[in-house]
Image 1 (cartoon, helix red, strand yellow):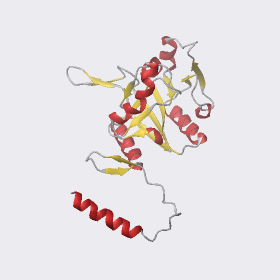
Image 2 (cartoon, rainbow, N blue to C red):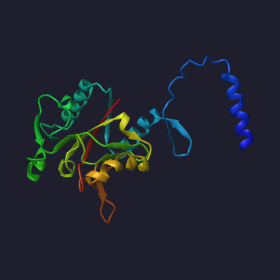
Image 3 (spheres, rainbow, N blue to C red):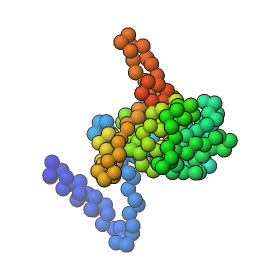
Image 4 (cartoon, rainbow, N blue to C red):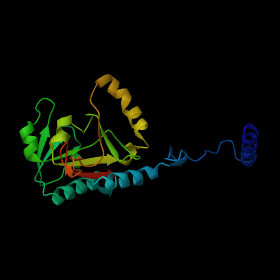
Length: 220
């Protein structure tokens, strides 16, 4: 193997021998390991994540990162589900907030009651990350996400996921949030589509452990 490696490197050096010393190389494309252990372009993560989370029953809307595009997608999600009141973390980006919707801010010093969250029925948050391999959203209570109860009691969860937040697998996601969690001790919630379970007769029941419906705004 070492002999073959030297042959390949020698050919590369020979091919580059006439390149001026001051010429800058083009930035490399980001790569990640795929299911087969081979590297694949990072843009594949977006399509893989969208496909996996849609398999779980979530609806994915792809938009640009422009705040107006994200806000429009959030507004469309609200229209689809007849949402008139929306619970939001106090620090959610104001550019995401749709017009014509009553917004209830959940602040650390003035949290919404569980009864209010249950009556409101819908929540808008960001996320800490997303996992392409499993179609999973990572929530760690960080900026734009709010406390855990906010995303467990609502019937509809509208979640904004930035393409740059998507990683390949679970280990990458945990590594990304691990450093912060070691200091904050915040709980981590992994969400793969709308909440669902089965009873003893394998009848599917939705909404037992969280939102029955999930809207993903995939920006980027």
